[in-house]
Length: 219
Image (tube, rainbow, N blue to C red):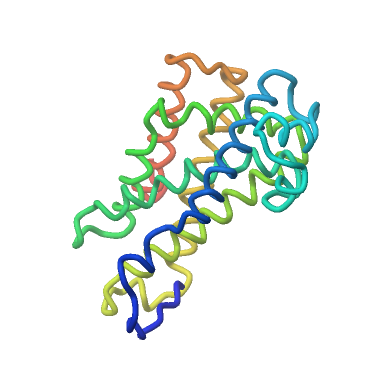
């Protein structure tokens, strides 16, 4: 659960706004992530080095390793960014809505083909690259932790879900496992086709998988 400090003395708009240094760090991270995905598209997974990514992003090799341990970990940024988009949708759900429904609605909103394309592309590439697959799983896990914290923060202290410490982690884990199952089925059916029709089919698979959760896996 996210820990908050009760001491808000001295907190100002300036102190919470991103500093120029932080903005530069974010820009570097984004540049290297974008360079990595362009390289994997042009050369294939495993066929480029950290030096290649650094050169394409216009940074030094040392700067690259200040951010990432490998080229594959830079690619995982795109997975994290996609999954982080769940949080704004989740926070927009009605306050009194059951947390299960809020979670599923947030993921359904996110299942727009335009948002899915890069994640679907990387999911496909990771299937043939063990190193990339590992970093992809780590990105999914980090996103799960963030969403567990967000749900814990939202729950009313009297909510029955708070009385069951496994409820929220089990819910989020089930939702993410359903999303990965839908991606796997999409890849099996299409071979990784990223056409609009294929991505629309992926969206339908995601909604169907979430539907099983909503119904408690009762047909």
